[in-house]
Length: 113
Image (cartoon, rainbow, N blue to C red; front, side, top):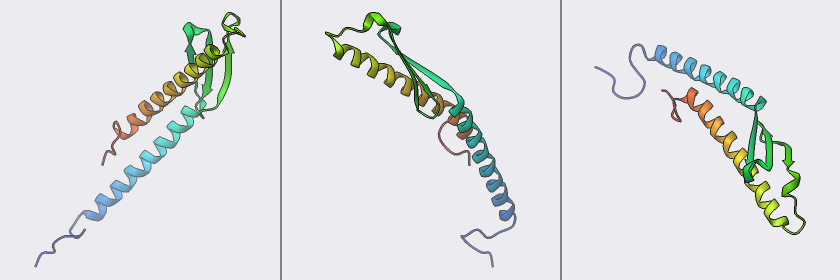
């Protein structure tokens, strides 16, 4: 009498081994990609480039440059807005790059098995 349900049957252990090997390869690729992403630098700008923010792949701000002509003691709020916009842009850029690189491994978001 044939078994029903479960993981019984011929060939299943081989399929599980292949599945595990594939998962291990994917995990290694993801770790390598993450390490490569952490080495990258990203830049965000605002106000036509008068404020520039650099960030590394670890999401640490490593540099902020503000053009002299945008510094107005009477309008600190505008400068704050420009810095905020540049920081948000660099965060968005890094996040999009990270998603694109990881998507190459996972097939666009889902697992390939």
